[in-house]
Amino acid sequence: MLRLRIIASVVMLAVLFRKVHLSSLFPEFDGKAFWLLLAGLVVTAIGIVLSALRWRAVLAALGLEAGLRTLLNHYLASLFVGNFLPSTIGGDVLRVARLSAVNGERPKTFASVVLERLTGWLVLPVITLTAFAVNPGLRELGTATALAAGLAVATLVLLTALLFAAAHPSVGGKLADSEGWQRFLGAVHLGLDRLRHHPGAIVNVLLVGFAYQLVVVLSAFLAARALGLESVGLTATLAFMPAVAIAQVLPISLGGLGVREGAFVLFLGPLGVERGEAIALGLLFYGMNLAVSLLGAPSFAVGGKRATVST
Image (tube, rainbow, N blue to C red; front, side):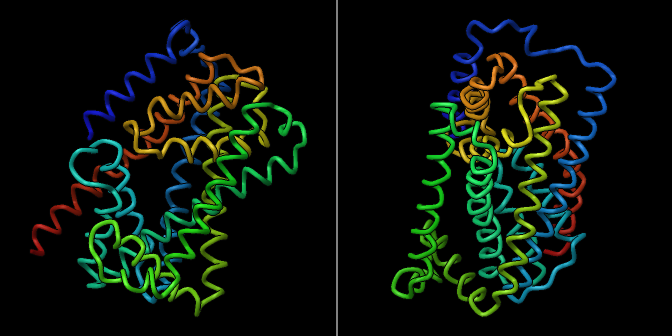
């Protein structure tokens, strides 16, 4: 499966690179661009902290306590694994394994990771649709507008159907102790059952979730500005970056390579962004996340040693 995803990434990038001058992928960076890029890296790092806070909010709603420092270390380690060791173990699996080894609550811990991920699928479409509502001009970009809005609406519909099925006792309730893919629905059922009794916790989780996704959008906006893409405004980034984020998680490429860049070409083309510039933005955004995820190498290594000692 990993080999197929690598091949798919190479093929998609090769198609995108056709008729693109390599020089357009490496624009000249001046002092302003350097500081914008540095700001983007800092914002990306802040996003990881917000991710850990979102995870802690979900854990608290499920009745599990965990320190922010501990969760941040696990999150950093999972990012490092997901970006640099894709064939070894999934980042989310690592988070569940390490935290449940401490709290002894594997089902709830698994549920917390699943629900934390699902909040993103709720927040991302809302951001896109809100941006279209705020900026009428973005609603007149043809295919780009239709696809971004379609992805947002489809995601909300699928998420609603998933939550309804998971919340229903005859579906999600029966799968609470299942294994394999059925375990996913069971985890959502467990989480929703807990959250139903803590409405304030739901608000807290969603607020942190919105803060995280907005930081991701800001990071992409700063990357675009570092590349000199002045036509990519903040509302345009708010409208299209969530759609890119939704598209790039499709399990058809490695790290979203090719899918992310192609999405940027499609969404930003009507704004006057050249193909090479859009590809450069996708690669730069990916590179920023790779650079920040390197911070997780020590957490991955140290956590592994601790796990070995404890066993």
